[in-house]
Length: 200
Image (tube, rainbow, N blue to C red; front, side, top):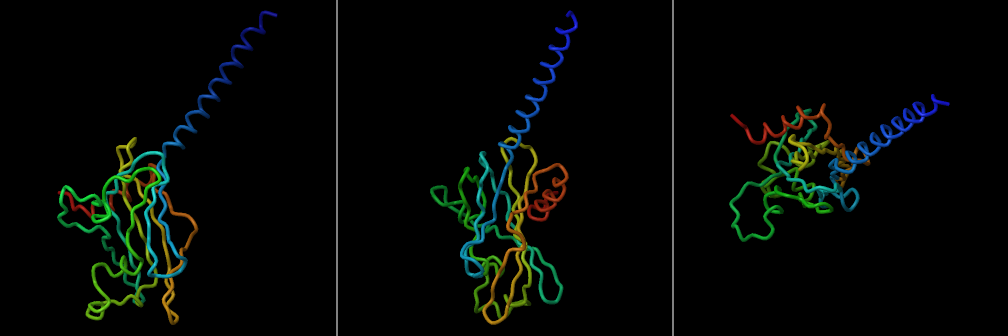
């Protein structure tokens, strides 16, 4: 009978180890950032694009970029962030800058897909550019953010494709926004920030 006590102690130790592992996994999952690039109003290219914070922690949006692919096969990266001087009393700073803290459940309006693709150009000035809206065949919208518990920037991206048969339409390539919050993604998200901020 004396062997029962060591066995029961070993079993209890295993149970506590498993319980601790499950608790740790659940804690990490609950504190992991989760962002959504939301395409409103179906396939209309004039629909709004939203960056939504579905995580439980506040995130700080550092940059938002769009990668365009054109009919000629060219790929170009543009910034969605508008850097302009804003007064300290502006109550809607992050909507203007496309930057700043985003509370859990909060969202950032990035603009319509047409405006994101064309940047600051109007439809009138578009004809003087080297590409038209109808030249764009695919779009990737991506954002790099700082998540409180992590010292590294994390990212999110979502890809769309465009059809220009008569009226232009835009469709997501996947129903989910891709989360780039693991160790293997750090270099890629850092590269986004470096192309945006150009550090020395």
